[in-house]
Length: 130
Image (cartoon, rainbow, N blue to C red; front, top):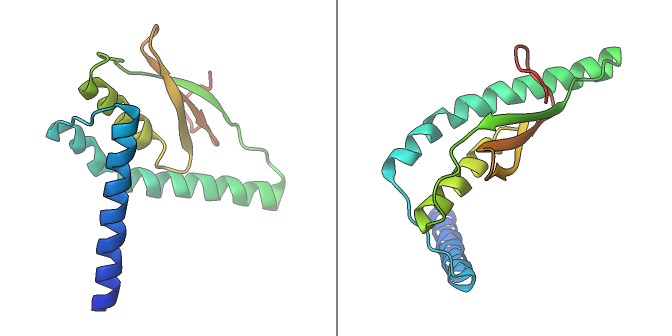
């Protein structure tokens, strides 16, 4: 790795952190996180690989045989939590974490029913579309 690439990466990271801080200040939103919230992030690489295989398999079936994949909306049970900075941070991390893998995209969390609405490009076996 060249030193100029490392410096460019460090500069981009610093600029991104600065912009995030300015946006947070402008929105009057505070970021407050607990370390245990990062534990589920350890499973994200496996989720990305699994969902990539699922999506590419569905693409192959569509191109080769003309099969339309079964897509749909699902409700995942979540706890909405409080409206504090900590609660907002937890919800933002949860929505972002659910949207990393290519098969699932989180649309939002329903406060009244404590569910997250997600869309799956390919509903996997054993998971009913709602």
